[in-house]
Amino acid sequence: MKKKIFFYTTLIASLIVVFVFFSYSNPFTKQSKIATVPPPPEDTTLTLFFVGDLMGHEPMINAAKISNKDSFEYNHWFKYLTPTIEKFDFAVVNLEVTLGGAPFSGYPQFSSPDSYAEATKKAGFDFFITANNHSLDRGKKGLERTIDKLNELKIPYTGTFKNEKEREENYPNIQLLNNKKIAILNYTYGTNGLKVEAPNIVNLIDTSIIKKDIQNAKSKNSDFILLTIHWGSEYQRNYNAEQKKLAQWLCDKGVDAIIGMHPHVVQPMEILHPKDNPNKNVPVAYSLGNFISNQRARYKNGGIGVGLHLKIKKNEISFDQWEYVPIWVRLGGTPRGYYPIPAYDYEKNEKSYELDAIETTQIKEFITDTRGLLNNVKEMKE
Image (cartoon, rainbow, N blue to C red; front, side, top):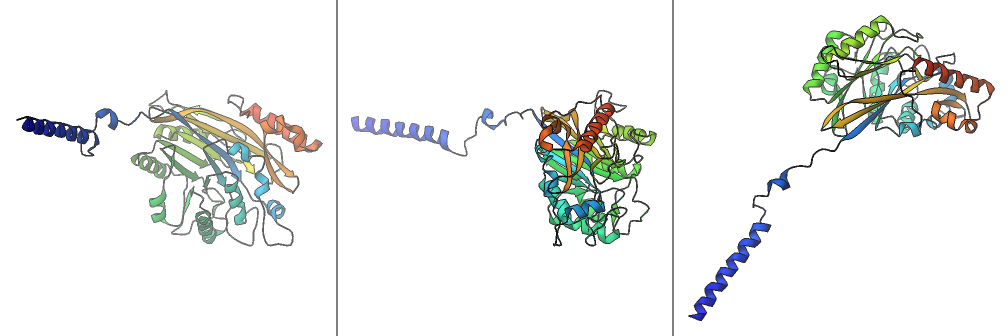
C-alpha cells in the first residue's frame, strides 16, 4: 500500500513540476499584457539646417584648380563651417550649378567640377535641391549628368528629373529622420528662358501642380512637409507681394515650413498661420542669400544658415523654434579659396582668422546688416 501511495505521490509531484515548467517556459504560452505593450515613445527633437545658393563663378573654379593637374580641390573651403553643420541632424543646400562636365564655366551658364558636390557632401550636407534658374545651363545633357553624378555620389536630391516615371517614383522626396517622414518639395520660378527638353522635368512654380504634390505628400503619411523654393526679385532685401501671397497660400494648403532662395541677398524671416488653424506656426525664410559665390558687393558677399528645431511629443512632430547665423564668405586664405565664416565663431575667435583691415570691415558690415534685417529672430551664438 505504501508503495502505491509513494507511486501516486511521486506521479502527482512530477505532473506539478512539468506543469509549472511549461507554464513559464513554453513559447506557446500566452504572455501577459504588460509584456506586449510597447513603451511610450520618448519626446525628442529633430534639427534641420539650411543654407542658400551654392554658386560656381569662373574665379571660383580657377581658385579650386590644382596647379599642373586637371583636378579641383574644394574640401578646405568648408573648414570653418563644418562644426556648425555637424550640430544638426540634417543639412540642406541649394545646388545652383550643373555638374555638366568639362569645359567648366561660370556665369551665365554654370558647370562646376564634380568634386565641388563631393566636397559639399563631405562638409556635412545631406541633401541637395536642384530646381533653380540654372538647372538647364548645360541643357538636357547637363541636367541628366547632374542627376547621374548625384546618384553616383549617393547624394539625395530633388527638384529635377529625367522623366515623369522618375518623378512619380521619387517625388515628393521623403526622408525618414528620427522615425518621422519628412517630405521635401522643391520648385523654381523659371530656368532663364531655357526650355525643358522632354522627357526631362524641372519643377516649376505652378499652384495646380504644387497642390497635387502636397496632397500626395499627405497621402503618403508624411509627418512634416518642407517646401524649398526659388523665387523673388534678385538683390532686393525684402520679399515682394507675390512671394508673400504664395507663402500664405502654401501655408493654407498644409506646408509646414518654407525655405526660399534666389535673390542672392538675405530677406526677412517670419511666422505665418494657416487661415483654418491660426494656432499653427509655419516658419518662412524668404531668402537665405548666397552660401558661396564670387559676388563681393555689400549684402551679396554672404548669406545665412537657418536652423529649424522640430519637437516630437507623444509621437507628433511640429515646429518648435528657429535661429539663424550670418555667414560671410572670405575670398583668400591659405590655400586660396572661398571660405564661409559663421558670425558667432568669428566674434569668439577673431584673431585666429587673421583678416586684413578691408576684410574685417566687410565681415563686420555684413554681420551688422544681417542682424538689422533679422532682429525679430533668434541668432545662433554657438
